[in-house]
Image (cartoon, rainbow, N blue to C red; front, side, top):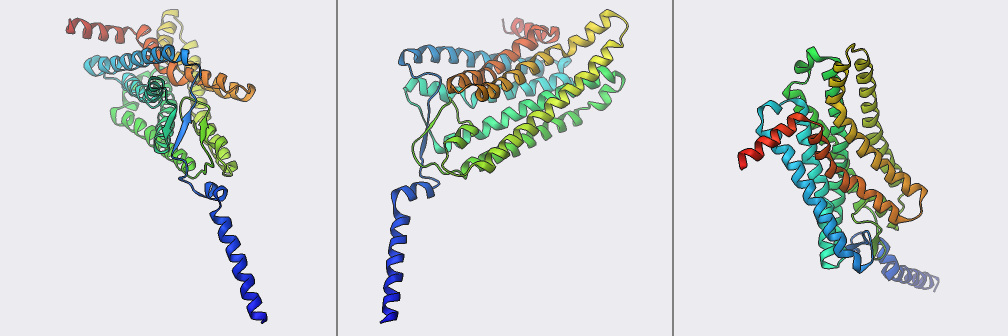
Length: 335
């Protein structure tokens, strides 16, 4: 009789536990693939603004692609530009095109189709490539600062130090670090659990936004992503600041004003791009920390994801006689 009662109790507890596991709320939290798509809320919900935003961002994207491809074409077609500085510049231009392509085309499609959805796989792909090219741009700017440091502070040894093999190695290492970091971002987001329809308050899949929307414990993820951002953002920026400290110190020791201007003009464009990229990037995080309005953060993100890649070709071409000369030769040759 006692055995029978114990068996009945076990059966009752097992049944209750089985029902609890099969409950919809529990299933939603335990199913990692329960969310098939995300909703990107974008820049504005106003239907009247959609055609204006579509035209604006389409124009900016076309200018970005055309401008950066012209830089790559000018460098590759002119043998006088086959130097380390322009080799890094062409890689930066290619990164800018790829960086913009990860976010803008999807936003244009959603604006045109009046849809806000992006598939789960599409979101993971977008955030992976976004992280890859964002970190790659940061590292390439650091490599370019080192190139200017060697050119100005060690001009007699420049061609020996910055030989083609070493330049290729610098780009390869930068790409490898960025790729590993982007795969880490992919892994972190792929482990998250989303309990319901996910509305991303952005125009692309931003990892911090996805962490905030997850019903998983993201404490470790947030610590890790800020640690990665501090390392791959702070260390390159520190390297750039150190390089320019050495560069400025070396320029000040030049006696003639013409020599000072010539030395500084070789790194003026790079310094402008660094200020634009890091200034807008820091502005995004500061605005998100100070302001509670997500719209302001989204607008700030447009600066470094869309505007900066578009302006880079103008900064380099307008301040660089070699680039302008190469572009004019291409135009004359085509006409």
